[in-house]
Image (tube, rainbow, N blue to C red; front, top):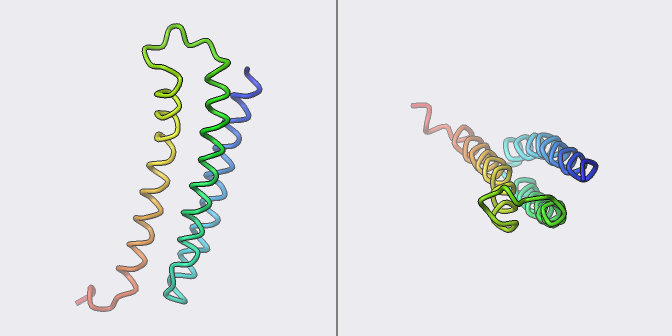
Length: 109
């Protein structure tokens, strides 16, 4: 059980680390080429990565002792996924909107 929990933690660290790299590339590409291709690739990567996270977190919750928890396995899985997915998607959208805003010259007047 502890090995699976540690594996999930390392998987989340790798998702966040990869996100930093991919969003940096997306910002640079958006700033220079004025295209959202790498932002769309980043969103696709996040959806796929978190689909795997949901599966493995579900396996961990299925094997964990949840008798003291007020929520069921599905709700705990949803909470754990949303706790990471919502901030990372919001941050990506915010960075994409920020680059769009600052590449415009009219906002500086």
